[in-house]
Length: 74
Image (cartoon, rainbow, N blue to C red; front, side):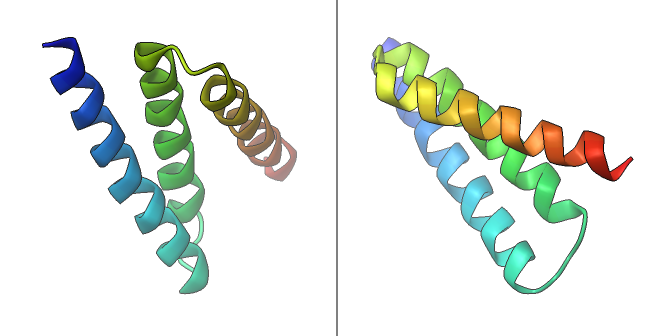
């Protein structure tokens, strides 16, 4: 069951992150930032579920950078 949940998180995060990249390329601002934040958060959860420290660190770092960028824009 845990493997199924992890797999669903992985693929949902992939689709959302790719959508955020597409939104960035098409200059759909600020929806791109929201999608990339959601994708990084879901990948962070996925990294935790599979106990992959590199995925946890990378996505925690991305979330920090994205949130900092949002905070600076406000």
